[in-house]
Amino acid sequence: MTPKRGYDVLFRRYEGNPILTAADWPYPVHSVFNPGATKLPDGTTLLLCRVEDRRGLSHLCAARSANGVDGWTIDSEPTLRADPEGHPEELWGIEDPRITFVEELGRYAVAYTAFGKAGPGVSLALTEDFRRFERCGLVMQPDDKDAALLPRRVDGSFALIHRPMTDSGAHVWMSLSPDLRNWGSHKLVLPARKGGWWDANKVGLSPPLIETDAGWLMLYHGVRSTASGCLYRLGVALLAHDQPDHCLARGDAWIFGPEAPYEREGDVDNVTFPCGCTLGEDGDTIRLYYGAADTCVALATGSIRQILAWLREQ
Ligand code: BMA
Image (cartoon, rainbow, N blue to C red):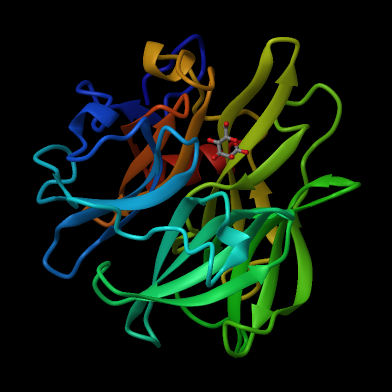
């Protein structure tokens, strides 16, 4: 870990960032950001990108690459479009997907923000191939977002991490379901801090939880409201393996935040917003895919071992 300004560097930016921009798209789009990520069985990296058009509405579009860095093949039309007729909760688009391969179903679950008249809520869709999708509909009513399913059941139930907004703030919760449709047993997992903290105003899950020997590693975004807008940075917590609503450790400092020009300036300045990551062959390297300034897609690389060691030193 090379210290920068006295702080450990836990995620390193890819020098060719940004890796995807609107200019790469095969059809006209305004911006491309906040992608979900997964590795397909043949090793291909798939990014399910949030794509915003010039109406201001978002859909999801898949980009595939053999090495996860360059040589992206992008679907020639939207991969998953909003369906305002069948699903009025998607009237103003669908955003910020998180992908989990659910072992029991043999399918990928995509949790995304459905934006409709009542506000943003959480919807789920299942897919085998990122070509055909089966919608489960809205699973968490507005306001709620930043959701991802765990890859297998917890205590016999499917588990969803998500971020409802209430009068008391924007905190990370976990809910359980027997069938992916009916949800209950809601538990608070990680509250936003208060006052001057970097994660005082909102927190939310970033990529889906990462399984490690020490527990579930949670990379989460923290929001600080300032006089010139919000700052979106990344922090880390560790959740108990058999009881993911129980937080074992939480880092005090943020570990990644807007520094590069493409993160500092864009449609929404000062935003680093990861929704997906993949793991390297070594089982340790995290490839973190993130939206930069709500404008483009960038990549940074970290190590599970180093992040856990850093958390232990806290
Ligand atoms: C959040 C989400 C993200 C977005 C971020 C910064 O609330 O809507 O999609 O990247 O704000 O604008």
